[in-house]
Image 1 (tube, rainbow, N blue to C red):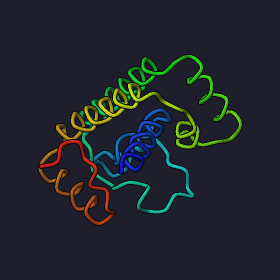
Image 2: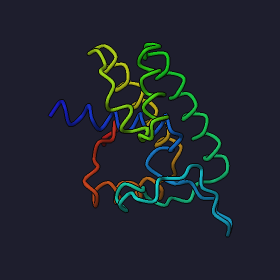
Image 3: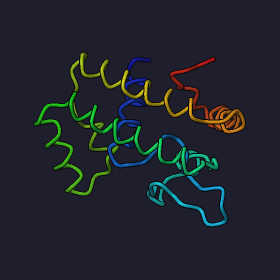
Length: 151
């Protein structure tokens, strides 16, 4: 069970490192969607995320949180670990694969988990009630009930 949680956290942080925001693809409420980050096209629909209409202000706040995640994660990691990820990604591995290959100490694992949960809670706090309901339905349908702010 611990391994499953750790792999979920590692995957989520890896996505943050590669600029994939949260578990949503941001779109403006205007007719032309603006995507904050692109997912690789080979991912199955459940991994691509849910389409939630974010306001420009929400998009800006999500970007700030994502940038903060990257900064915090880099502070937790050693220079050798950062280089290991960089090298793996340069050799063609995805951010998720590169991150999953790093051996973190139990202290680092706890710090990374805290960073991820806090950032997820910050993002969820920015969502409207309707957006939260959409996200809850998506998680229920896809078995992704790993929210740090379970209610």
